[in-house]
Image (cartoon, rainbow, N blue to C red; front, side, top):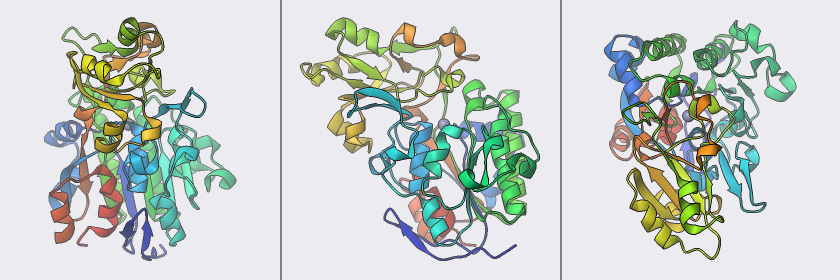
Length: 414
Ligand SMILES: [Zn+2]
């Protein structure tokens, strides 16, 4: 293998000093720490257990809302949403008044660490399970970028690589599967083995975590398989950093029914039809969560004052935080022009909906497990090598999941 370059580079105010060895940062989508605990306690994740013992295992705070696109954008830029501009999967575009997906790189307001690493001479590859993330992750990237979901559509001209199925030795998986995530990790192993990349970002999907609790046999098997692929990366001499975009909690009543507050129904009844609720978890992958998460933004007609509505919402059981736009931008580090007049977070076991008709609960597979709020904020943070004294001290403070590239590149002792 050609020795990777170790030319330092700076992006978004952080300096990176990549070691002359292959690197992989992994986003374990939806991996609440309980999933690692449950699997490690049963001896199902020996490689990550070794990372915890010989390297570092801690907890980090993700960006709010605790959603996939928001946190993937944070991880690859090293910035909170106020810096990179991605505040959800979905938002109300103030210029058009329309509700639109925010999965296009045109909404990204910062450079990525990956594009900068490639400019500094690293052979960079991003592999994501869901194709919806590919455009943001591979923004201005001179390198390889493809998804498991559309692996068979990758071409050298558009994705920096072709014949991905042959490379991985596996057909393109369906997105609603454990295989969608495992394909990403296997692709990472193959890219390093073949000398095609030396700086990887591997982003999985949380389908399994939405569907299964940490101690379910399916979840344990899934995490054991993840661990096997991480073991293969470690055996290749890859320095591995792993974190999650958000955690995951059951959002159910004791009888198993989804625990939903229909915000738009409630507010329109009391304050009129002009109130609009936007659920930034909304995306095309409805079987995961039915567009139900623990975070919502509310757009009010000009005539309606926000303070009494905020007070009304804070009086409801199951609603834990309500902020006006300016406070949300400051305290939750959000882009003020891409959130509503009010931002609402709900309890550990509660999700926020629009109206009963808006959500197709029949599309949910099994009970409702979801994320988006404060209770899915703390996520695992692991490195395969021990931290230097400087980074160990930083890890003892307010470690963020979007510090993972800096810690993986700069923070290790060997
Ligand atoms: Zn996610």
